[in-house]
Length: 399
Ligand SMILES: Cc1cc2nc3c(=O)[nH]c(=O)nc-3n(C[C@H](O)[C@H](O)[C@H](O)COP(=O)(O)OP(=O)(O)OC[C@H]3O[C@@H](n4cnc5c(N)ncnc54)[C@H](O)[C@@H]3O)c2cc1C
Image (cartoon, rainbow, N blue to C red; front, side, top):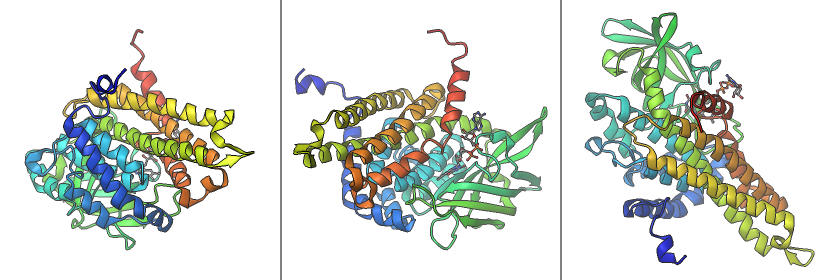
């Protein structure tokens, strides 16, 4: 096949706009993200000034409506941005994802026009940092078991409870809270089932504070993770998204793109790891021969490459089919995250193995990718949750 034929259909850059986006993000990553990644990882620090620059590039509101300051791009664009950033700094990429997907895309999808007009321009420019708070100290996968409550009081709701593991929950080392939290809390009960509702909590709302910044994480150390505390936090009723009890719908609508972009993070990790082991296997010699001449090293490289290509094709195909304004890819958004995250972890592990002792230290990057890769099997749904969901969704499917 000639180059021209190969380029007829490019699954990864289907339009000129996607191609330009990839080039722009890749340049930004090379020039600005890569040089700070190692230092921010070792200091466990979120790079807020760099994050704000993503706003100048139109990336913070990448999928948000242009009418409200967003870039109005599609799921493929979101995948491109997350893949490219995570090929350099998955921790910084996670902070980006928590803001742009968990908070901004969710609000864009589920909020009303007043809420979008009030918050999306500030979130898309980078003036405000957003996060999403679902998990709690005692509840993660079992969402309906959450304990945080929202009680109606005149024209307000009073929020009480604690949220755990919240990416961007604090934006610095002084426990400064995120500017906006998209929060899930129990607002009542219907037919014996808890009703979960979604709220927009601003930094200025009284009773909202950071309990602690969570330290000593294995990886993703370029993003801040925090526990949030809500003590009689008073929120105007205008900050309820949709109606009481709508949260399961909100979660379902947003989970597809969340899982897709988490899978895209793993693609970035794998691509960078393959690049590192492939180069090293040529440069490094043992027993008078380059490493790549040894069968066991060939297996590490070849299996990594083939598994990466398979996962990449799956991720971009699901992105191509995903309409951000509709549900419809539930099964395969679980599928891509299940496949890509374990692939990313395994590929980073093989890269470290190929680099030997050098692979085990920060300067050679793959050890950081190896640590970051593990989180993607846990956050945004554990791999066991994906297995459970996929098996449920396949129940009545014939092959
Ligand atoms: C760095 C980091 C960032 C995060 N960012 C956010 C964020 O921004 N917002 C947010 O809301 N949350 C966030 N989380 C939380 C994350 O989504 C949860 O950790 C995850 O959903 C798992 O929940 P859990 O930790 O409570 O584990 P659990 O749900 O208690 O699970 C523990 C183990 O039991 C397994 N398990 C549970 N139920 C079942 C079952 N039915 N069948 C089989 N196995 C089961 C799980 O798969 C897992 O292996 C983050 C977590 C981390 C570590």
